[in-house]
Length: 128
Image (cartoon, rainbow, N blue to C red; front, side, top):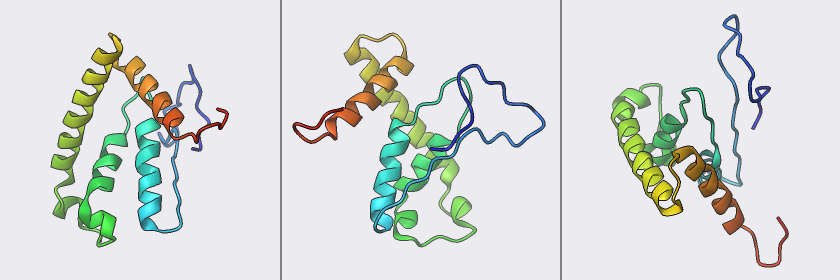
């Protein structure tokens, strides 16, 4: 993750609105995609709209996963509809998690989920 933004920072209107970039790599395409899926799951940004759901939708697309893409990919695969589907699924997951945690705020639930995911990846005996 590469960003120069911090809590309370105001992004000036005179520059590109890029606030952060997230990059993943792996020994092959499959591993890089899996790492990016996890990173996007754990990537929490509040207070501004992001395109995280778009990236999740692209990563779930079978054609993208196989590498069969071109400049018409977004239109040909109707990614706008895919984004709506991912948003609905993520919203329901957030509601369920918030409810299970007794949290009134989905942001708190998302943060708890990210921490839980990170901790579940540790090997036994490994310090956090």
